[in-house]
Image 1 (tube, rainbow, N blue to C red):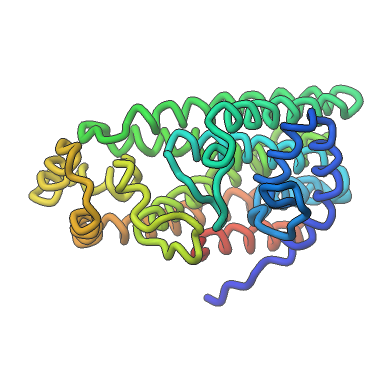
Image 2 (tube, rainbow, N blue to C red):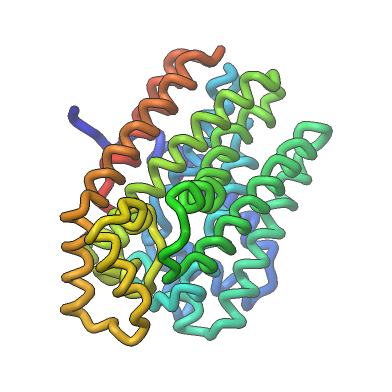
Length: 338
């Protein structure tokens, strides 16, 4: 199967970027400058920069969500802006919690301006996302804000579990799946539902689109976990073996631990040895996880989740042409290298 870069991503950037810039312009000067840097709009000295702002997957899903109900993409713009703001709130805090000093091939906000700045900029973006939706007149704006608030709560719960599970060999695969469903699936599901909510779609349509997004989100996280161990730093913008270095209980690692065989025993022993973090040992552990089937399982599970998402979508009462675009985006997510 040949995977091409979906046109919806480029089109969503053109439509959403002006509204996103307008939203960020409402922040105080210091927060605005640091947010603009994080979003790739400027360098650390405030000079305009081009690019580095990510793939805009979630905004594209929000616009397609509106179009899936027969409305123009513009109806979904507030939802697209809001999910991008919440996503970047989570990235700012993620970088700090993980101790990552680079993202998208540039220094992270906390590494340049300190932990308080990363926390405050992230908080500002999260609150701004709610404001963007509440500025939409009538019940649709309030319903969209409520949906996003619930997804953000689930996202934070997933992040809490992610931190709590680090280095613990007794966390089950089911617990790690549940963590990923919150950490990544919740916001992806909100992305594919918000446009429909803003369009006033029936509840059954919103649920179908949200279910599609949550399954795509799980596929996204599975591939993200693969890249977190074996990804090329030139493509990902993050250090190689980053998830092993931080002893994340990622899905490939959790799968190996669930086997309860000699691979699991060796991985458990490594997780218990907090002093063993040299580069050579990390490569040995990466090879162990791959030999035990962790990488293959994660990639196959991502494809299964994607297949499930497509079945949900094709059974829904949505515009057929938009179904094809949503499916193309999902397939791009599973094929990505960064």
